[in-house]
Length: 433
Image (cartoon, rainbow, N blue to C red; front, side, top):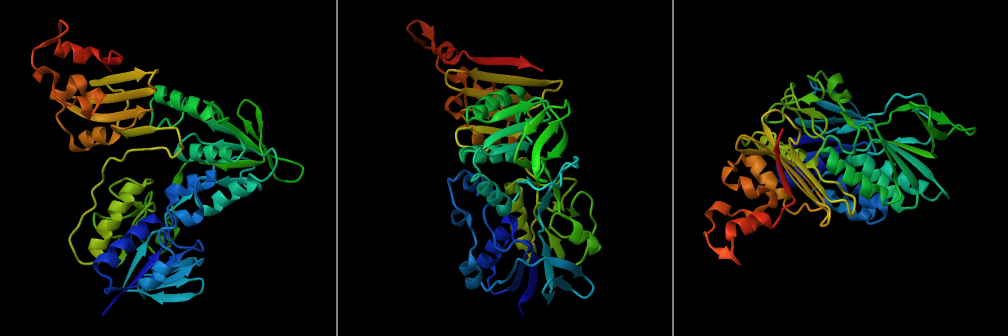
């Protein structure tokens, strides 16, 4: 007998879960898929290229109507789930009830809206989904349109760059002293600011918001900063973080903290109710990047098929999807007692690298401009490699992985080979925190 599986939410984690189930057990599940959005799964990572005009919505669809039809998935798109009754094992949607054997909560997250005076004015939006993207694209049709983005993190900068590409005059404000302060150090943040400003975007760091002001028509007209400065705008975009969407799970009696609490097998506190994606909390952590969501989907697919699997958290690298702004960040890049910092700053080549070493291990890396070695550095961070033998040339990446001390003691033009290699890149600076 087929297992009646109800999935609530059709985000990227759900898309990957269905891929696994349909590949490995296509005849084992009778799937009903709810989604509040009137569509199936699309690649949210590619919303920025849609906003900038580099791609269309059709380009980023991962599961279209034909896919769901071919895999016999019953789709209830544009329909919100009102409640889950774990005792009766029924999911109640706006159009009626669906019985289940197992249910997956994949309700994602909701954008955090700063509760400033005027936060509910027309023209104030978040940047989270296709609808938000469509609003910004429509807004770009207004002559001399002005927008303010609150938040200089990944989403805020992608929104700003996308709108600027469509001719909107954009100002980004950021409360911290430099952009992407959670992923970049001050130097890389400064380089990013320069590249963002080169696109005609105004960037204001170390400033805070006080109120959102309305115009005579009732729509937003300006953002007022804490010093009283007013930034005129016809559209205000908040990109200041997300919160797990836990309301449905909480109402159904599941254990909820920051997110829906799950164990290593993606099981909630209620029998036959599972959860994955941005709505969950696992071992004290919540998730906003795609890589761990895909890992969760693989584990949950195994769990649903009765195979042993466990979700293990991993460090994830950060990248920015703005053409021409190449950056990479992984691990812990902060200064701390006992850590050694290695920096390469090459303005001529437009390359900046910062590595953080603790003991004999690489624990963090920030790259800007030249990110080709990012995956190599991340592999050493994840594997907790003993990099003692690579220490002197680590900053130069895999091309210089050969231990300098192991090179033959011969000379070129009177200079020893070891010295020649060491002097080839004199921009490397070394120090201890």
